[in-house]
Image (cartoon, rainbow, N blue to C red):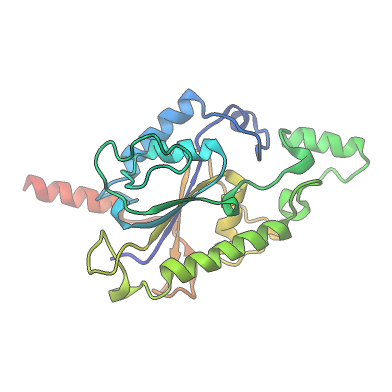
Length: 258
């Protein structure tokens, strides 16, 4: 059975993500294409023999922004809990598959862009030139005036990572690991649905990388990343570049046909 994992999912496409505009607190809906692609992601990656096994999710963190919450809905995890932002909508249209608690948290809201909210990087450089500031602006090093610095983001993410590991991952390796509700030890994976910059920063801090060094990570709109550990140790966090779940799917299909 696999070691505990954290799946990070960036919300689907919006008009501003298409245009490269920095979107923090502004509420924007997903585009029609964004919704369609998230539904496809759910069909491809969510299932008992897929990358994200709903029955092995112990906890779900979601951003306060509606675009992230809508993304979680479209993944169709089969959650037992009603969505906190929409409690009147019955959950689990296709049957309950996931017993994870869903929590809206400011810890995974997007980087606060402050004065740069709604601006493209090109416009930010122009603005800084007009203000007599260096134009080689880098959010990872410089942060945003009126918003958050890399140190601000590091503090809130480090607190979340420490809490997540203590609650859901410590002691969850080997015989202590849960898998699809087996072994009586419960699930151990965590899902985070949030935004581009904050999830890239989360991945960097997961492996102890300083944000000011620019983590050089990319997560496209609707993209999915996986974080885990090396050597079955909570002391050795790692970014999982590729898993073998596709092979598992093919092998099970071949066994069924045999």
